[in-house]
Structure formats: structure tokens, C-alpha cells
Image 1 (cartoon, rainbow, N blue to C red):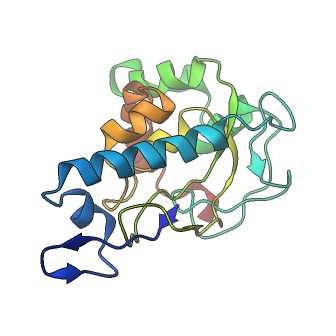
Image 2: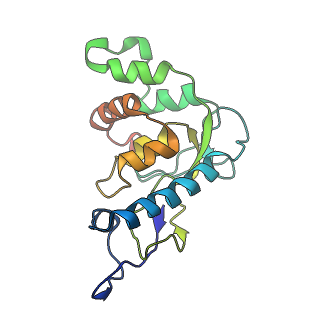
Length: 190
């Protein structure tokens, strides 16, 4: 999700700041207000009703794009188990070495609800409040942990503590996904 805002200080406006720079700005009240606003929008998205309880698809139920999966469109998955199998590059869960992939096994054997996920949280920001939510190319239905883990795929995402308040704490799933990002690279490009 790219969010546009303008940041003011005693010298005036600083348009087009990158999110992390602005979120690290020395105005904690402005940071807090912005994080609450982002949290509210994320909660609204997560409260939408999925087309099926375990949908993994685009916003319309069709193929989707996600930067951490690769450059190609990915066909929708019938459920989270199929999606997780794809993330593991078709490796069966019981074939994984538990001493190396315990976090993946733990994450991929849990049951999740599908939540509407933007999939590309704040990078470009302007202002002290959200003016627009843009960049919806990665949006769609994903397992409930995906928004939290996906923001860590890039170094320019929303700070974890702000997103944790909106989505819940998926630190264990993040460890598992981090292993897969190294192990499976971009599964859609295989």
C-alpha cells in the first residue's frame, strides 16, 4: 500500500519522503497518529468477507501477482494448503527437515482465515495523514498472516509494531516465510 502524505516542520513541507524516513521523523505524535490511521485502514480491509474461507486469489478470485512470489501471475489456489505447498516449491510438509524448517512446518500446518490483503504496505508517503491508498497490484485474498510477513520482504515497509497492532503478531510465521524466501526464492518464476 503506498500512502501519500506531507510532513511539515518549522521549515515547511517536505513532499515525497520515503515512508521509513518519515516514520523515523522526530515527531512522535505525528508518527503515532499516522500509524493509528494506517491500522484503521488495514482493519477495514481485513474485515471484508472472502469469497471462501480459505481463498488465495486476486480481488476478483482470479490469478494474482505478488512481488515475493516472482514476476509472473499465479493462478488462484483452492485453499491455504495448496498455497503453502506452492510456497515450498511443491515440497511435502513431512519431507522437510524439522531441524532446519521447523518454523515453516509450524506455520504451514496451522489453520488460518483468509483476509483481504493489500500486499504492498506504505512506501511512498506525503503528509501527516493518509491522502490516498495506491498500488493495488498485489491485493487479494491471502492467509491472515500474509500482510504482516509480506511487509518484511522489502526493507521499505511499515514498522512491525504498527502492523502487529492491526493484524496480530505473526512473528513465528515470519521466521518460516523468511526461510522460504531464502530456500524457495521466487516460486512463480520456476
